[in-house]
Length: 173
Image (tube, rainbow, N blue to C red):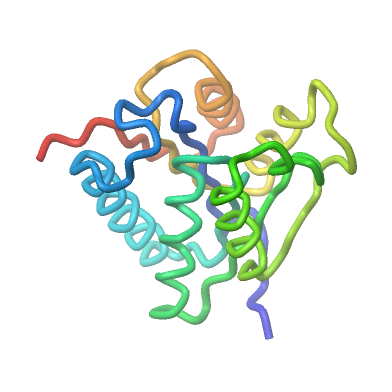
């Protein structure tokens, strides 16, 4: 049922959580809506280049936008598969109830769920990011150079020779 999945036809995603986005959790903000459009256009371009498998770490913020985008595109392109790369089973336990419901709904729609660690450790997020990069040939990143997990993932992806598509979190509209 699923196409052959390998590093050459896989793309991962990394991006900012709401705390690093200028609109925070206000997804009705015009800048957030513009970013979602660019993520959708970028993911579709990557699909049209031959990528069929998408992997996302399922964090709050940009990861959720990406997941929703790929699930939307999967309805248009049924060859797409989507993998939730989850750092630990407790990832969403302390999130606000509405974000936890959204997360659980999205994870439930994924073709594959990979838990990098059974329980939280100091390194599970980093291990999740490395897993995604090591399993992909393309990285799409919502990134503007701020220090943190996305910056680390972009640098790691560059060392692993992935094609990197960087999207600024601030889209001029």
